Image (cartoon, rainbow, N blue to C red; front, side):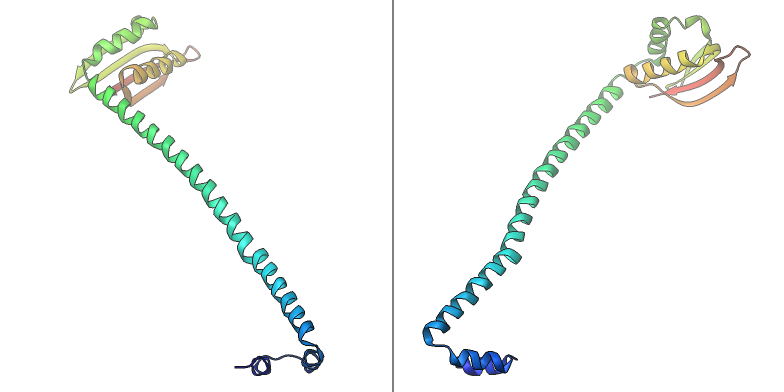
Length: 169
């Protein structure tokens, strides 16, 4: 198909066709080259450059995602290790409770301490709320004992409570 037939199929203003016909072959080559350069520049600016930027951004996001995955895997391994440690320290909870209470000078506040079915039932007649929270935190961190049930009753003295706790691993 000749260039003229191709141009006839494209809706081009008649003035442009007359101008094209009046150009010499050298001017036509120059015009064709200019159009090619403009099309190449537009293709580079509209297609190639954004594609390169997207590729670089995707590469950076991949690196960030790999780093986040590595952190998540390390945290999962740490949690599994802590869980194994807590399960391995499945000894008598009475020893752990008595040790923490002795360290915090709270032995005198305990009115009863019973162990049944691998659970510890502890009753404090009057204990400071802050001291109770600190003791529970120490038991959880050191021995994996956590309060699974608690009944706290306010006492007359400000900041003190009567606490009935059920602790388990």
